[in-house]
Image (tube, rainbow, N blue to C red; front, top):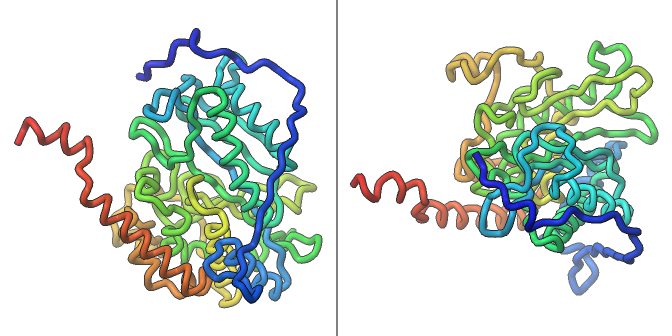
Length: 375
């Protein structure tokens, strides 16, 4: 299916001692009088973390970041034809992923695991859970590091949500948890799924407000080419403890690992702004806690096969199908407006409206290939 580049044009990266010193610095933007600038995404996340802290919670996030390696910036020619969890030490892409992991560790960013993903030349690196602000900084650093390592070796790393209709998209499944001190607030030994009342309310908040926060977790026109049936990406605001296609999953907990109880939110792609995405996921969950939302039972049906009336009877909402739909939902969301602040909310949506208008005016290759000779 894919024309791979000539292996002779690449050399596998040799092992080398890692002695280069690298530094990074993150800053908060303030006004001349020293107040936080309300348009700063980092300040947005800080404000939402303060809301959680007043309720007694510390918010932790662990993202699974997927991305592609391509031969160059002008094509989507992959560097390998491997599949899910394949291990081929002769692949340049595998070497690039290892080099990226070592770079992250050198920068003080702990990596939990890494592996090859489903599509050719698609890879995943999972960062070890930490507080949300540190993690947002780490995600920004991660994307720069991955691109720099790739560029230094003459190839392209991209976090575009779905760079080809022949491939799966790249997500950033985010594992979320709240702690009170050293105790996981989501854990309940008596519950069959070990999910506490707080955890159930948080999950219910994500389900109820998931469609309206999608403009933030999936902020690009291309994001919605990933959120389609058949590619292990969520299409409906439903939850499960087993399947992989729903918006929210509650992973099973091993005995003795009670601190690992978490909620996996599967909509975000790795091209989102992590400060804003982590903010709105937290805000949606806290709404559920503050307002005692009831959690429905997990969905076992194949939702793609159900009619709209059947989905409505189950209380299942569909996620927006494109950026325009997402912006419309976000415009009227008090949860989103309160989480982002008035300034960021309006500026973000204004930029997204412009992006959608530009997209609507663009004549695509699909249209040229389908209509130019036929019409």
